Image 1 (cartoon, rainbow over the protein chains, first blue to last red):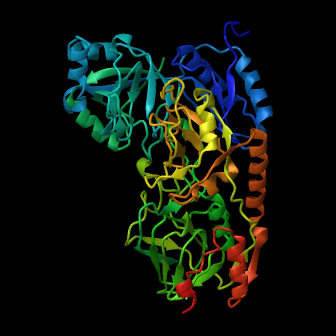
Image 2: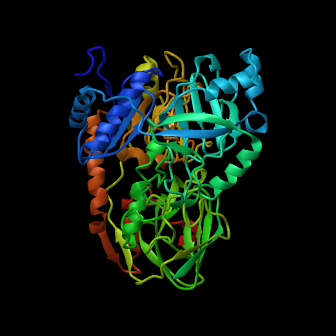
Image 3: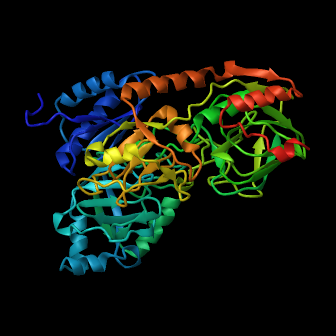
Length: 244
Length: 339
């Protein structure tokens, strides 16, 4: 049985072809854990008419075809699935991801260190020293939102987001850490850059990371970054899959 | 094999089809045509499956030239002047363009996006089962970007010179129907203002999102929520209180509260509201929206049964088809019609 303290999720219509199954309204490990558990349950035992699911920090968005299943029936079945006990939190896979910190690769590292009364090395040590989980992937292809950031690294987002930040940016925003794949706008603080491409066409797989994967970072220098970037361009993963 | 050469084009004109699904969990948005009924209508008129890739033409003038053979095409969606080598071309009707013919389209007069469907579709390499252009993700074929003057598209040669028309039910021009939520509880009394006001689509809109102009919709608890998933038609309220309706190139998740969602059957009609024209929203229940979604699915499924052979010279037929299509009432440019 599920622990009695677990509140049932809220089932909110997102139009006539999707339901938001909301487990919480704040960033919370348990809520994310329940999101991923429901996502797995639906993958293992699909409901006819459900077309795809999108896990996020605190909710699972379930897209469906209203010709094949109606809101009431689907909401009932999702409620029942969400009441099932949540299996162990062991991550499916572990990745080691190389990061070139600071300088041109992480233009905010010095400022973050100054603001937090630390040295840039302290920041790097605290950033690499954590076990992260991919809480969700969203916004643009491969943008991976991680939970598990050292709370001493918490910084508000920039007042005014940058319109263009590089591909492979490793950044932090509030209590979140991120791996950005494509170049694009961001209001987060840029600590470094990885050559790992979480999204790359014509590579197997196109998307490297899955929600629920475990991530650790390790520091590399600019020369290694340049080498790895060339390898990644050839279709190599660069990230290491750690078999446990 | 024939070729369709883009000789003049404005922004936001691109190859679009039914979209790519199944990778929203990795941040990949579906893309695809903003007006699925118009896409499907055009494809059925040239004998294609309904969601075959076609050219989605933005609000500005565009022209094409046919090379190396004949192509059979159909124009649907937003009405605009259309002529092929000085002959008028009607909307919602297939026709054959000869080698060397130029198809010249004016700016959209009633609506925003028109579709040029081509017998046999557009040749390209699908990714995730779709040719739809999504420039940010580097996706789309034959070009992973909107069309530019000089682009050459490989298309099938016309297999017949037959012309077809289609009978479509009259289109509703009432308010855009929405299902409240998932975060309507972030708004309180502002919900009444949202539902009771006239809105206009801003000229800064694009295929990611249509920005609306109207009264400021205030949040009860600020404009940041923890990101959750989005759908086509999600109505986000950002910090400035001016709604953004998310379109097929949207981000797959977003951190602004979503007051409501445009119902599926009204998405195409909403997408075609011209910039600056006032419109209103009307809240319906999920059950009502699903009844309409099923009716729209039925219409899409039965489109091929509605296609009728049309005689080349039957002007009345063409006019009737244009009128039945609702948005295509002004499909003929009065100037070209009289030449």
